[in-house]
Image (cartoon, rainbow, N blue to C red; front, side, top):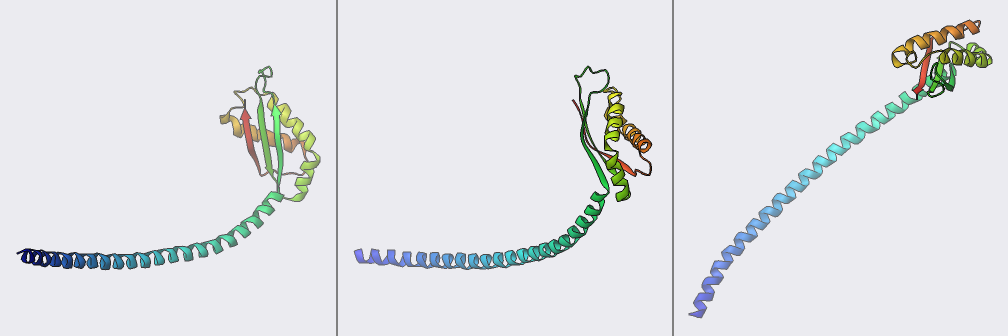
Length: 173
C-alpha cells in the first residue's frame, strides 16, 4: 500500500515537474528573444545617434572656425571702454552708475584715433552721465544715453563714423 501511494505521488509530481520545466523553457526562450531584440534596437539607435553627432560635430567645427575668423575681424573693429563709474546728479554720492561701452568702428584708423582721444572721450562721458539724475539714467532712457554719448564722441573726433555704440554693462546702485 505504501508503494502504491509513493507511485501515485511520483506520477503526480512528474507531470508537475514536466509542466514547470516547459514553463521555464518558455520563459527562457521568450527572455532570450526579448534580449536579442533589445540588443538590436540599442545597436541601431546608438549607431544612428553617433553617426549623426559625428557629422554634426564636423559641420560645427567648420562653422566655428569661420565664426572665429569673423569674430576676430569684428573684434579688431571694436573699441571698449570698461567700467566707468559715475555719481549721478542729486544723489550726494549715495548712488553709483557703473557702465561699460563698446564702439563698432569701420576700420583700424578710426580705432587708433579713438584710442588717442580716449581720455577726452572718457571725460566727456563722465561729465555727461554725472549731470543726469537717476531717473534720467533709467532703463527706458538707454537709447537716448547712447545717442548722446555718440554725439559727444563725434564732436571730439575728426574722421570717425560710429556705426553702433553698445552698452555692455549698466548697473545703478
